[in-house]
Image 1: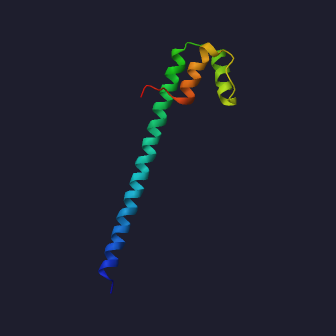
Image 2: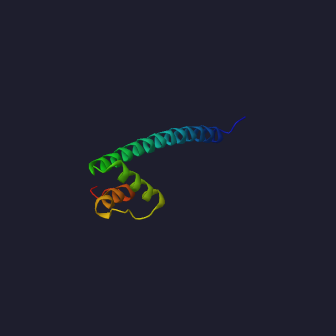
Image 3: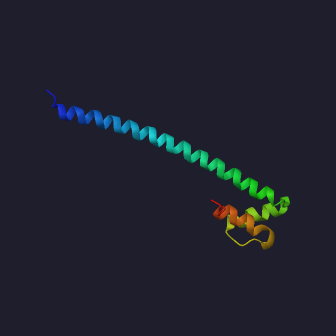
Length: 89
């Protein structure tokens, strides 16, 4: 003989767990989409600078090493956009 209040709470717990699972899946998908859009933005920013392969390699190495770029006038703008995003939101 089950208490109706307990049955109701068990049902509510089950429903809540399902919602959490669904929301976690939605969150993962939204985060995945955001990473894709951020990566596209980074690629566009780098391409707009029209830097050579060697300069791009140096820039990427400096970002990985978190050291200042050797060509601040040209590369710092891209580095800032990569590290901090654009401020135009």
